[in-house]
Structure formats: structure tokens, C-alpha cells
Length: 216
Picture 1 (tube, rainbow, N blue to C red):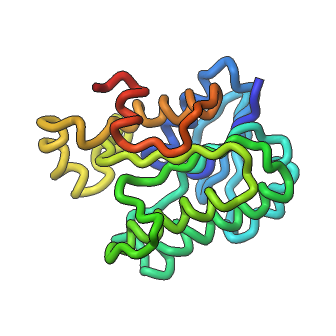
Picture 2 (cartoon, rainbow, N blue to C red):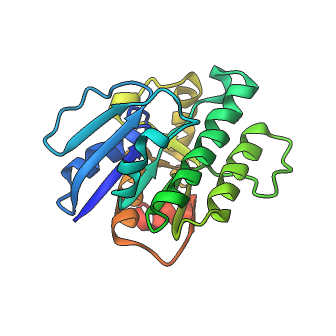
């Protein structure tokens, strides 16, 4: 049995991961940590509303007892300032990774990243640089098992149909050319499956995710 920790349980992907973890018989307990309550009630769920994502010291004991982390925390860059976007995308992850290195480096860490993440950190696109920097921090950490997921376009599940205008506008293109992305529930299933059962790969590009999900 495993203890799972989900960061960002109210987001488009995090909410799907949360539901799957609660339904998975191989997961004994789920701890969700977010900026607001999810509203989900379940016998094996403990929910924490965390205020300072640059300081995970209050969660050190919880992290020490965690087997798998699903990091689904993020924000659309258009919704926040440049500084806030970098802090949420990069600095939050760095703070968590540092704590885990000290408390439980044998945890399995699943990072929800994005297609186009620039691990050279030289892309002219801020989104790509930030995602690449976050990946580099995780890869350079002492955490033993790391899995990085780089989906393309993500089709929201039923609860997030109107998540952004861009998603609504891009949906017809995705319907015609589904290989450019993945449905959020499928992405979540792949993340949970690999987080629980492990895999020999570390980085999963969009095609790899679709293959694992049986979407090709």
C-alpha cells in the first residue's frame, strides 16, 4: 500500500489525479495540499490548505511518510505577473524538492510539466524557460525516483470545460488532430499508473503519454 501526496488538487489535472488516487486500492492514504480546499470528502483523504509554498517545513513529517508525490501545482502565465509566474512554477518546486531531499529522498516524484519545456533555459518563451528550470531542479535533486510528464494541449475534463478561452478556441483543432495533446483524465491515469507501478523512463513526451494511455 502507498501514501500519496497531491500538490494542486483543485486544478485541471490535479483534480483528476485526486479522484484516481482515492479510487485506487493500492493507495492507502491521500494527502492533498493546495491553496484552497477541494471540497472533496473521502475516508482516506486528508486535506491541507497551505499558505506559504516557499516553506514546506510544516509538512516535513507528512513528506517523510509519503511514497509518491504528484506535483500538479501551476498557474496560467497570463493570470499573474512575471515574478509570480516564476515563483509558482519554479520556486515552489525548489522549496518542496529541498525539503524532500532532507526528509524522504526515496519518494517517487511525478512532475506535471509541459511540452516545449526548455532544459537549456535559453528559450525566448518565458513559459518554456520556467518549465525547463523546474525540470532541471528536480533532475538535479537527490530524489531517487523522478518522472516528468510533458503533455501538449490538454483537453479539460467535464469539470473544467470552460477553464480558459484559449482551451475553448483550441478544442476544435484538437478534435481534428488529437495527437497534438491528451485528455486530462488520460494524462492523470498515466501519471497515477507510473507513480504507483514505476517505469524505466524518466521523461514522458506527449507521444509517450498517449502511447501509455492507449490513445494512439
